[in-house]
Length: 451
Image (cartoon, rainbow, N blue to C red; front, side, top):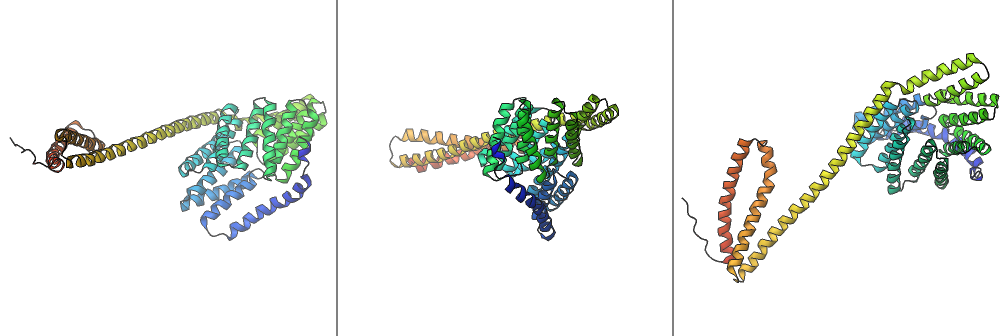
């Protein structure tokens, strides 16, 4: 497994560093020269994504610009993209309620547009929110839904990310063997599609898995590779996680200086991009390390930093917001499921009505043919009357919903209109009976007596 990461490493290092900078610059040039508003919205979202893991403030700025423009020109697809981009920024800086709110807003738009790939992306992001909150089972539920969609639409990049996320979730559930299984598949797909953006993250995930299995030499190698790859794409969050993993290993090996140096690097990378959860973890580790060295002033400083960051991440109000949003989304998904069942029933009912109408018309046509042969006139007459009763009951059934709507089901109004309708249908029935008798049975109709 270690060897596969060295294949093509120099080519990646040389080409991707140039491509990253050139990509951002080319997006800015396109934005400056593009006049079509819908294209500008998508370019702003692309720019937000390019800065997401390195400069979240800049990412937030571009996503907000894109959202405002999308709403001004009435471009729901672009609005969904920019809401999702804003959710990404708030997720990374630790504002989980706001991230979840934005993702759910994006999901509503994307469900209306029926964009399966976009829906899958949003499911994945919602799953990440739950994972960051420690609800790994619920996160796995959303990521599994994402994987099903990506497999259905054959989205290789999406599937690679799904497998990486599933591997990370299994690691959080303390199942490193399962974690490695999914990360290896994710890495294999990344190689097939030449997607290098996630190589650093996958390498770091390997390091975490091997560390939990106490295979420290291999873990150290993967963490260092993760830092190398992540640095090229300016993924400061992965860099922070890799340094943090190294610091924990060196702490266990009682190499205090190396542990402090790596933990300091982890904190620095996390603070540069305001990744609060990583700031908190690195600060707590540094506090413990300095306490072990009896450097209590430094230990207290980092402990206070960790507690302040923790309050920003996990205060009671934010927890309530997450719970409320999750409950509301559960209700919304339930309503969507019920609406789908209602729609299926309405389609089935419509097909039945069409079938009944076709049957009545066909039945009357067959009666006309039988009447021309002048055989079994009484049987034909009985069947003709049966067909008429069926026809008028069918008409009454069709009219009933409109009648209820017009009268608002007020008993007096409903009864009055029903009587008038019945009288009209009775009169029509009498005339139609005479017509059928003459046309089908070729004889005069019985006289109608009026009292």
